[in-house]
Length: 202
Image (tube, rainbow, N blue to C red; front, side):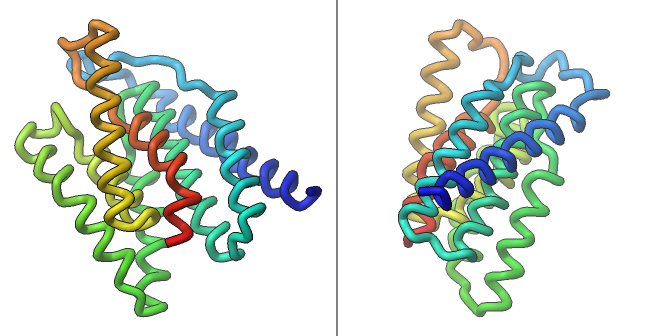
């Protein structure tokens, strides 16, 4: 029980660090007039959610490697959630660096599953970003999706991300903000974070 609590505290701390870095990144960036409406990330729920994920992973018998992957992914998800909410940007620093770490591990282990899953998840979102010219779907979102694909595996990632996009559209319309683009990162991050324990078990 103590070990589970320690794991939860560790993952909650990772979330807090990611929040601070996300806020610091956006400190001198003004949201674009034609970008998503800026807001305030749900800091406390994010920290609690990450703590719960960490505790669940440890309780389910996750290996140190799986816990390490989860920590990297959770950091990226929280940082992207915060930066997209605050200033409408999903920085490469929060997506490509963690993705590179996962893919380097994949190459070292000659496990091509992560590479294939990242590519499959990335492709439709990249197409959407290309067609919308980054307005409907941004390239930062597409890179975040690639990270989610690598962590979750293609089948779970595609299902999870489809639900995230559907939720984003519904919430956006109910909020009456149809005239502005959607900040997709919070929805992607929420869905991927919830699915992460299942994804690491594949």
